[in-house]
Every structure is written in structure tokens, then in C-alpha cells.
Image (cartoon, rainbow, N blue to C red; front, side, top):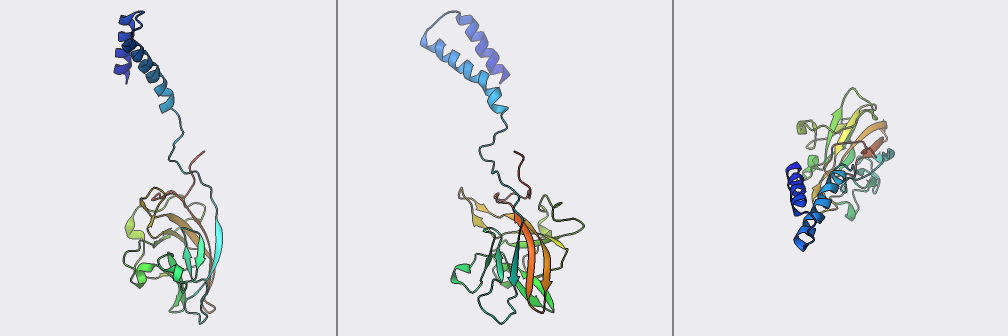
Length: 209
């Protein structure tokens, strides 16, 4: 960059007061290059997604309950509970609640044979909900092929199923959740959660404005 600007400055000095079209183009180019440092120094990123923390809670019901059409699964991408019996629910959830061996568990799609789903859960120890600022990069920490036992006070990171993003790329999304209440006898689970809306981004906090 410095070499180019130095060269153009030398050319401009040699041309003197000439006003031929080629010299004018050199002048215009020089003016543009002088502006570039200011443009490059700008903090604005046209691809940056601005978002805010929106923690929320949800109540789900175990698939072991005899009633039909209860909200037993959760879609972290759209942030809504799902009735797994609904035709529209096929492939549109990340975890389902079940009761196994007297415990409330979350079941990723991969645990029931949906091999292509990337939805998985990573238990996170020795922290709080607000302190989880980034999802783990170690893929071995994520459990997607078996049920995960839920415990009140335990923290978890969720990696969602894969879905096409706004620009056509395949995306997973990362979030976090913490069980607030569970009742294996009644088959109920409530948890607080939040999810980043940024494609394939493990950061769980919004970018600085």
C-alpha cells in the first residue's frame, strides 16, 4: 500500500500541471487510495449480526406420559416447544423429553436413529448460566447418540440440528440451558435457555456495539 501511494505521488509530481485524461485518472486513483486507510479503519462489519441476550423458560412433558399431543420436544433454533406427533414436527426439533430408569432425560434425534442430525448436548461443570460465554470447541464433549440425564443446577450447551442459513450455507446454532424444575413421576421438565442466532458461531454472547 505504501509503495503504491509513493509511486503515485511521484508520478503526480512529475506530471506537473498537465491536465490530460490519463493524468486525471491518476489523480482520481490517488485520491481514492488516500481515503482507504479511513475506510479500513472503520469498525463496521457488514456481515456482523447484532443480537441481544433473550433468556427464556419452557415447560416440557415426558414422552412416557399417556396423553397425546403434549409439548415433549424443543426446537432451539425457533425457540419453541414441539408436539412430536404433529406431521410438521418431523426433523424440526433438537431434543425430546423422556423418562428412563426413574430419571428425566433429554433425547437427541441421534439417540433414536436419526443419524444425520447434529443436535447434541454438552454438560458443563463448575459454572453458572451467565458465565457460559462460548460453546466448547471439543466435539467429543457433545452427546448426540444417547439420552442425557437432566439434573437441576447442572449447566448444558446445546448444538442444534443442521439447517440452511440465510445465505444458503448449512448452519448449526449454539445455545445454553439449565434445568430449573423436574418431576420424573409427573414427567415434567422446565429449563431456562438462550441461543445465539449466528450461524456456526460458538460465541454465546452478542458482539459489542
